[in-house]
Length: 260
Image (cartoon, rainbow, N blue to C red; front, side):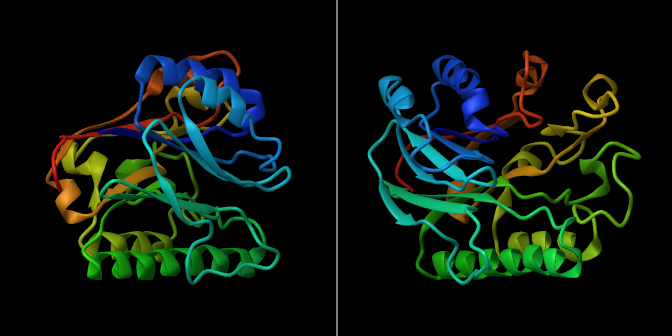
């Protein structure tokens, strides 16, 4: 199985990029974040013609998540269980396909909204950890993939790319990410590449792409039996070099086929 996660930073601006990428890579599943459109505005028909059905949780101008699938699926969640936000924010969608549960998330950045905004980020991460516990207790094989807006270690960002008080690197953010790993989940990329700088995001400002001043904030966490089937995990850097790209690139993960 091959799946990917990609913050597209406006699907209506980047739909052609996604269609071309799907044709080239042919993943079974693709989780998209930061759609910046309502469900009605999402170009589902275009993706259906390309062989992908979709489930969309949209929001006007902000946030928004979707899953594209070329395999049959059922929708299990359109919001993250246990997380409430006022006003509501479109940040989680989950499907079941065969023996696999695939959760696609767009975690709050945490730098806006003052203390309340950061508390909302941590609340989302706590609810995500509790949801993972529920899935683990049920013996479910699952992936939690998406834009986590967390650089887990100093090696996951270019030197000087963020100040130490940024919400993406604050100690509480990193501790919440480690909680997911301590539950027994596997960071797909770091399982195969324990050291080295592998970025998934480069800001549009200050020549970040040209200077390779990036961040690793898009992650795929695997439940234990899926981790045993892990074959590869790679950011597709070339997408950042396209004309009018997203500031994120896809993270592509492949698993060995077979019964879980």
